[in-house]
Image 1 (tube, one colour):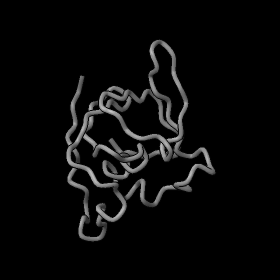
Image 2 (tube, one colour):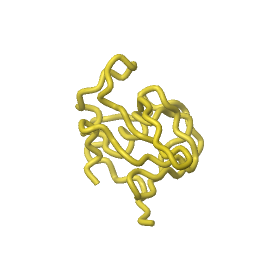
Image 3 (cartoon, one colour):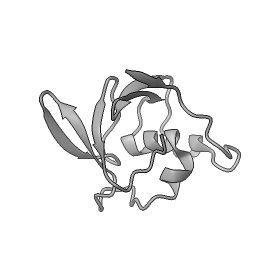
Image 4 (spheres, rainbow, N blue to C red):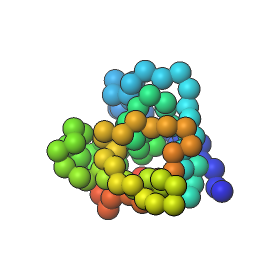
Length: 108
């Protein structure tokens, strides 16, 4: 499996992610469409996506509160897939995301 560390997030001075992320002590590993990524624990998947692709997610068409389905992702749940909303789902160590909604541009 390919492994990706958090990217360097361009223009970090413009975006202070500490203002939008929940407090965290460590990064945990999740799998996004076959690639491992390190993301901050204690945050929603959508905030973790913002951590990985700051500008793309920050300016994406998301309501951030569960009223749209633009952040829908599909998790591997045993031998089945389970659809969840990234803005309402807390990240967990080893989480495996197998599909992303069309509007989620992580630019990998």
